[in-house]
Image 1 (tube, helix red, strand yellow):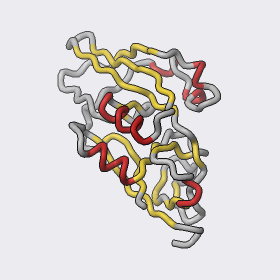
Image 2 (tube, one colour; image 1 turned 180 degrees about the horizontal axis):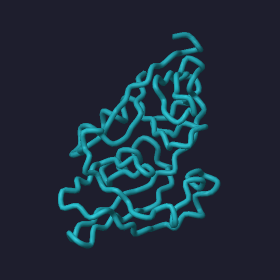
Image 3 (cartoon, rainbow, N blue to C red; image 1 turned 30 degrees about the vertical axis):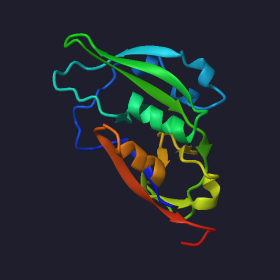
Length: 179
């Protein structure tokens, strides 16, 4: 089975960029135990840009998924908690609804994974398949960055829909600790 890091395609430089989010949403609350501290719905202003492309996944400053991507997530993992984020560009009269998924965190990268010095960027990710617990979508545990990982079948299902701007980075998989 293959797994991918899900994010925004780097070719999309005009994805929505949120202003002053850190005063309203605390990334330490992006887990099952603290998600109740995040309001159910937030309206966030984005930097004004007439060329903004509302991609199907926005991964900065935290992951948000479109309605289409949420539907796929729900088909594979129906118990995900979401927080609604409305992104608004008042100057250009643009708005889009996204969802912040509060995904289960799994510690499933093995020792063959490679990172930068402060372990904030995964250079080479190697998944220990047995530690994925059969999950189709989850978050990697132990990182400041919110890394979303999707199993191949979930990723294929997303790509069959009307999505745009999704970036994928394939992870290596080892089974039983053997690559």
